Image (spheres, rainbow, N blue to C red):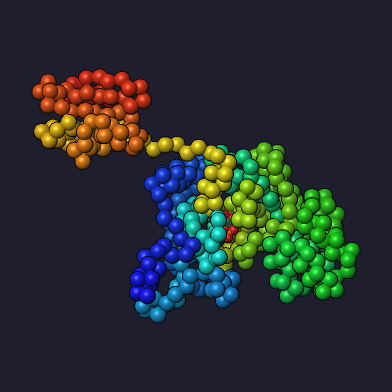
Amino acid sequence: MIYLFQRFVYQIPRGTRDFTIIEMQNRRYVEEKIRSTFESYGYKEVQTPTFENLELFTAKSGEGIIDEIYSFKDKGGRDLALRPELTAPVIRFYVEKLQMEPKPLKLYYFGNCYRYDRPQKGRYREFTQAGCEIIGTDTPESTAELISMAYNILKNLGLKKIRLKVGNLIILKEIFKKIKLTEEKQKYIIPLIDKNLYEELMNAMSEFRINQKDISEFIDILENSDIEKLRNYLKDNKNVLDEIEKFEKIKNLLENSYKISDLSVKMSIVRGLDYYTGTVFEIEAPCLGAESQLCGGGVYELIELFDGRPSGQAGFALGFDRTIIAMGEEKIVFPKKTIDLYIIPIDEKTILKAVEIAENLRKNGLNVDMDLLRRNIGKALKYASSINAKKVIIIGPDEIEKNVVSIKDMKTGKQETVKIDDLINFLK
Ligand code: HAM
């Protein structure tokens, strides 16, 4: 019994993962590529703590969210939570310390997030997000730039089979108003739209005594929401026409200036989180199956809720783990990590010289490893090839006497003798 219990204790917690050496190399490669796209748009990196006061997350979403997150009391009795996402933490940080920064403020981040989700492929209890927030503007060009950046991050990683869907919550709310769906009823309907449960949606609307013609029109507008159709459908709701125009400008910028051709307008993009207020978007990789959403975001409001001065806010987060799975599905090749040099001292007497040379080369900016197991040359060369060494330096007593080393190029197999004093120049 005790043995069984111990076995359980020493297993990895459900929904978490260890990453192998190769997986970490691939993750770092992807992180660097994402980082460089963020920076190419003028975004700067920030970091916030892994845990926050629980209230930061319940303030907008209510107590219901506690079932979906990791929350706990610390030894001082404070209610805390492991962050389920980074938007609320970054806005908390902004309100506390960054409000005086010049606008627009473009912030990006990488961070581990925790959600009490049911684990499956692409859905974990600990996962990583790469995301960003832009604060201080709500112009159509700022939203279009944000959406295009999300799309280009994924394209720059080599992903070809992705789909961008854009929606708008102000317009959707007007559609709800037109068919007389009260706030109460919307709360019931929105999760059904979010999960694409159309049969349940139609049944619920019938129960709310909405006539069949209105239901069909509503479903059609959710799925085939071209802008003219929206304008026509809402022509009597004058107060939304400005938002439709803004939405159209964003769409035109994305299609005509950012040249994103595979974009679709979908009013069914409602986003699960409660803080969104305007244009929203999602990017999917259909090859991922059930958990195909790679990225989601849009225009939202949180600053005022955290007692900050009103300012435009928008952002998105990309599922880092899902992005890597999608890259695997599209057979994208990750670069192999190499090491510049591997040094093999032939016998015990040559170890000191090998250490001296390795240290000198490292000081000159090269990545150097050396044989620490006193293996014979054959085995040491095999190991060098397994760690992708570009070159191998072999040091024997004869070489030391002549103040030279043998260098073997692992790609061409060519072997040369080089004076120790000329080594740095030769390698550079
Ligand atoms: P979200 O849609 O909840 O948005 O999450 C963003 C992305 O995180 C998802 O599209 C998905 O790829 C990934 N993701 C979510 N849950 C999991 C999970 N359990 N396992 C693996 N990946 C997951 C947000 O979090 C917002 N904060 C985005 C945002 C930023 N909006 C404005 N600014």
